[in-house]
Amino acid sequence: MKLSQAQVNFFNTFGYLAIKQLFSPAETAKIIEGFEWSIQNRGQGQMHDGSKRTMFGGPIEHTPEMCAILDHPDILDLIGGVIGDDFNYCSGDGNYYSGDTRWHPDGNWGQLFAVKVAFYLDPVTRDTGCLRVIPGSQRPDHFVRTEKINPSQSMELFGVPPSEFPGNVPLESNPGDVLIFNHDLYHAAYGGSQRRRMFTMNCTRRAKNPEDLATAHKYLSIHSAGGGNFDTGAGMYFPTMIDTASEKRMVHLEQPIAIHDELFPQFARKR
Image (tube, rainbow, N blue to C red):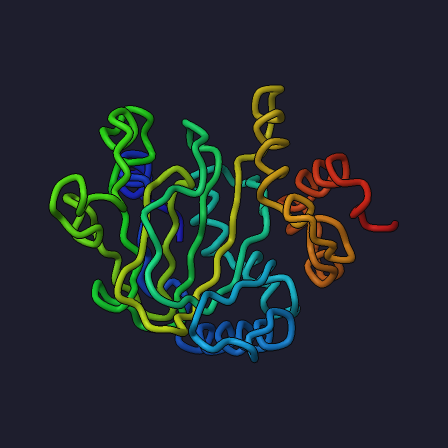
């Protein structure tokens, strides 16, 4: 599933892409099964009562089948199409979401350095918690940034509910769809249920110069197990991700492992 030039242009301009039914129904069923096993056995999903979000780290790293998402040709083409085929996989989070989320970016890098790939495992619409985005808000010159507007305060500022902030786009989706967006893009969700299943993969450009390497260090000092002061037992990733990795997969793991071990030697995998 090589991205077209039009899709690349759309992503670079507006900061996101929505790919319908990237996964087949059979693949989607296996992913849902793997997610449920992981959140129940590794993420305290059995404790979820809907009062708050339940989240766990490395959602694709706990079973061989989920790890293989990082080997899927269409996922590789999607991520590689926007940040390069030799991208770094930098873990992610799995969730039972509960209620609304406020408008926010996941980063403020001022460039296309990091992306998030989002997988919603239940049908979600504009009224039931789908991802909403403000197109173009990843750009440093977007009015939200230059005028320091907080879209979550739009009722106080403009008399408009945050869910109806002008220009926002609801990305309604069904299981099997995949969304990818720039970390700097403002996004939110409104009107969702108390148990929305969703997981993510965070990925960055591979660092190839001193400036990118410094940014990668800063990124992983925050967006990593060590950054969260959490010991996976294997450093940057949970053990299954590394133990089942082919040479091809290791291309996406090796640089984050090296940087993470440098930043957090106390959590480094014992070799």
